[in-house]
Length: 91
Length: 397
Image (cartoon, rainbow over all chains, first blue to last red; front, side, top):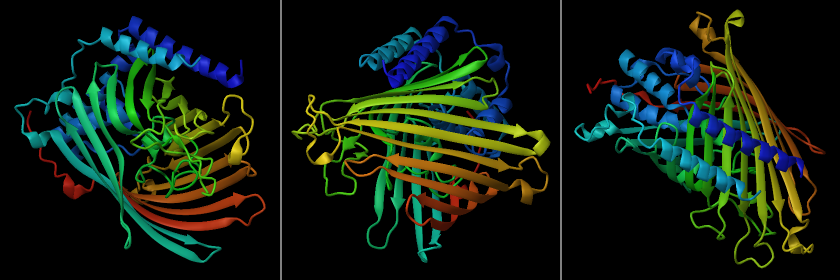
């Protein structure tokens, strides 16, 4: 088995393991569950670009941008919900 | 081994069906109710840049600019549509290119299904870093732009399944896709002969490309993300007698680390990606490869960049500055030509007028064995979400 195939097999195994684990344990771990929207906003938006101010957009536009960013950055459902709620409450 | 991606996709679909009854989060559905004004569910925005480039050694200079309108449309609670078009104005021939147009359907809180044209999820550059208002530099790294030599995929036309999930104190994210895949250029008279090009709307063969990316964020503050990508595709034209069985297998590794360092009053931002492409041109063990040279071509491209911004300093004129450095390398194997090695070293001093507007002053050196270094100076203005589009009128739910 070539090195590349071993790497591929390992990655696929990890993906499967991750899916299985997330299926078994639906309870959100404390680290994420305890975080509030402002914290998630500052941690996640800055990973790729400057975080915009909550006052830059209306509620409806934040909902649109949230739907876009959930896909683009592969954010979890809980993260994007809390971030959008924070932005809508702060604008 | 070839069946593994199909098994993974089936597992994902099976997993998603277990959670089909999940509720939709409230914040994202505030304006999704059909009783709300239709315009509230549209967002027309965009980004653009103006670039000035001066070649120090060749005494040449050039201007180019691009405008990219973006439409985001929440059709319903589960359906979401997004599209972006790149317009490149030119006196003689203005180019208009569709970057992506994807319809998404939210299966549940773990998975979203997308169909259409989408930016390649292979690695992080194409999907997350390529817009000029995000890119710390005025151009893409070597090998990551189809206007130069492209090593790895750039966009896909097909179906994708993606999402993210907590995993203990860590997180994972995942994308799997089936697409038309890249096409092998068999025109040996072309400079791109023997290279892979982004696939078109009509597939050049009956085979579909399969690929995935798995991202892992080990720390609860999401500061570090490590990713692994893979894609396998038949790339030869179905009608081509010699190369119809040609196949490309790609592997990619990516890294992102963003951390605030209070002692330096700065934010440090590191990004990197490595793409490896194995092009197999063999045809049923036939070692005679006609005019395309060797049976196997191996190409690779990678970049690593670091940016530091003293964003925690109180003085705005200092906190708006950013210093960035990048090294990008390509090692291209093309037909029976000698391998082409190029290294691009870039340094950039950026000034952020606001989160959405940046001016970059960049200096670059392109190094190639046996040739004189090509030096270049760039000045670029990049903008996103122009303010005149977005007056903040709060709409009550």
